[in-house]
Length: 396
View (tube, rainbow, N blue to C red):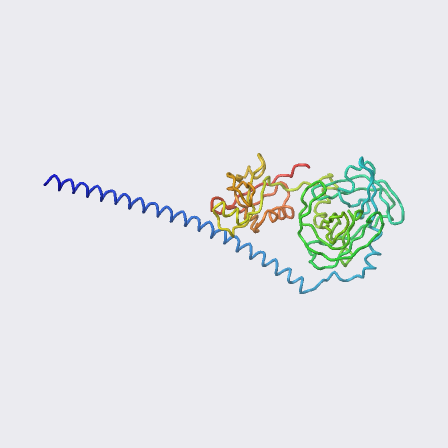
């Protein structure tokens, strides 16, 4: 009987030990799980705190815009007739001969040195460039500088100074959607043609003829047709606020959507184009895409997460040197394979990044090669800052 009692006591002891171990294991699991949840929540709270700060900065910017709106459209000061007659002597017809044939475009006088601004695609591959002034004078021109990335070129002519009537530059950053604008150029070779419309949208993206994406573009419904390329887009003070560049059309002719390179972009690049013939754009060295709810879910994040997903980093590029991480696994998103798991950029220098375009636009407006940029990223549910020294975009 004693042996049976001893065996029972032993079994009870073993059972008690097993229960204690199981309880300890369960407790450990719940503690670790709780800590992981807290860590995840802390990362999300930090991300939300960053987004709140960014929204406050955007709200301040919107207040400034509201001040402009209260003042009204101060540019409505000249009649269309006055603007045309003040500007027509500054707009020229550009004729080119290339290995593929002949073409025409427009341009406008920049300075008394004989420099003229036009589109890169107007003069690209040109073996011969001729500029025709409104009085009929024709002069040969040479290329001073080009930037295919924004479809911008500067050419030079040697003519009497009396023919050179430089335009007056405005500020495209002050444009408002709905503001009236004027396009002057040479559509289909018809010299000195003026059309009128409004600013339809700001900050658009546009594909250049060689496939590059141009950011920060002005959209207008002022009629633009082949031959208008390189001509000025003017505000109602007669100031150049953009350069007419392209259209969206199923027929190749104007269908109500035209694009112009903003004058702020042109002003930023002109000194380099004139001095050294090229312009260096900032370069991060990543392949990125917008974070959608489906991508966020595939990465175990809140579906409301937004930002720029780093799909891949260029070997030896600034992003790789800074330690940014690209995708690690593939997921099927809307029927397509997407590389997920990489860093998500949610801010740059304290400004919110809700999509890839926000990042590119900020870099183009505010950065140059060699500049420092502080990226706020989400990595494995945690928010952190990464400092990057930007490089120069490789030549096309």
